[in-house]
Picture 1 (cartoon, rainbow, N blue to C red):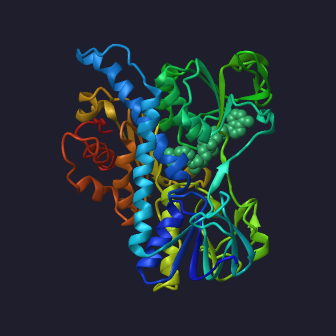
Picture 2 (picture 1 turned 180 degrees about the vertical axis):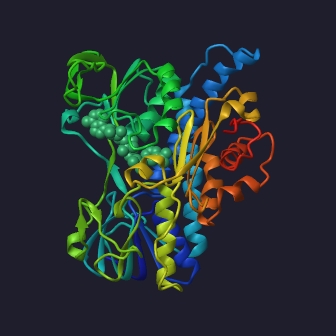
Length: 488
Ligand code: NAD
């Protein structure tokens, strides 16, 4: 007989959005079931995303630090890389963290069910066991629920050009397994994943070529933030081809033969790096975006509406079916773990004590964990231009930062965007080592409605990189000690 579980709340998907929601709901006394296809919670972020990729990026940092040490008179020689040990270390980190999430379920009495969930109707999900025979959630469990939060995440976008069934073609998941370090790697897509994983492979010894369809790496990110990263990547990568795409691939004896072509007709007289040339690469990583994972869980049977793949929700993350909510990558851009977690908690607030709570963050931070890192939050200069919105911008270049210079990383830049009429901080952008940590101060400032004067008046500890935020704000008020602006 299939087992039936009746639950007050079911959370479909155990990633950072799903488990944050399930934990908070259970803590608030809601009888909660968390259903996920993985034996341990954590989702893409934990198992095949943020955590394993940041482990590898840490390794890339260690290698770079080893090289940079020479400048300070310390020589380590060529790094010897034990891939098996590195993989084991990565697996151990993921296992440790996901085991602690599993314990988090037990501690909070969240009923954790393992299996694939499919809606049968607006109040029923059928769970298919993942392995034959009894499993924690196996033997055909049916879940009936009063309320549901869908947090099914996203999956790598595919391009038909690369659909040739070759193990040499990697996506962000298979690239993380790091089965070998290819001599040559073609990275298709100069976005978050292409640049982060491309950096890892380059540090481990691959000769990396990046092709990016648009005119810039990280399209949409402010050009002055991308510039220092571009300069450093140009030294780490073999080639970076902008406005280029791959139009054909074929598996040959030693790799994948790819045809690189300009992505759009170039204006007369203008040169692209490529002219329909062929090159062979040992492996190819396709990182051209992710798409919502909404096609395979029977949303139509629950009556949940989807638009361009994303589940449609209101400001409370409620779908068109009033007792069903959706959060995270499946519910819309940006596809970021912290956005999903925040949405998960919002929905629980709505379901428990704050029926009127709405999604209303002033500053959504984003971090690209390359070297240097790029981080921003709130309004960007690119968006201000698009919106025709006037802003005043205070820029502080890290050449004047004592901390950045002592660690040999003065290639960074910090900028603060303010409303010219009120001095209120609207956005902050940082490029530089550790930018991802620095941006948190900016999020607090924007959320609390701080002005640039407030930021300038806050004493930042010396010598730290956090001073660069203070100095960018000070510049806007003629208070900077390190930027001289001659009086007119
Ligand atoms: P992305 O959108 O960041 O980058 C994809 C890139 O591929 C774009 O620059 C795009 O112009 C390019 N592209 C698309 N089609 C192409 C083609 N045919 N040829 C060449 N280039 C092409 O996507 P991603 O890097 O795959 O990452 C997916 C999402 O995952 C991101 O948007 C982000 O939300 C999330 N993510 C976040 C982090 C982080 O927070 N650090 C890290 C990894 C992924």
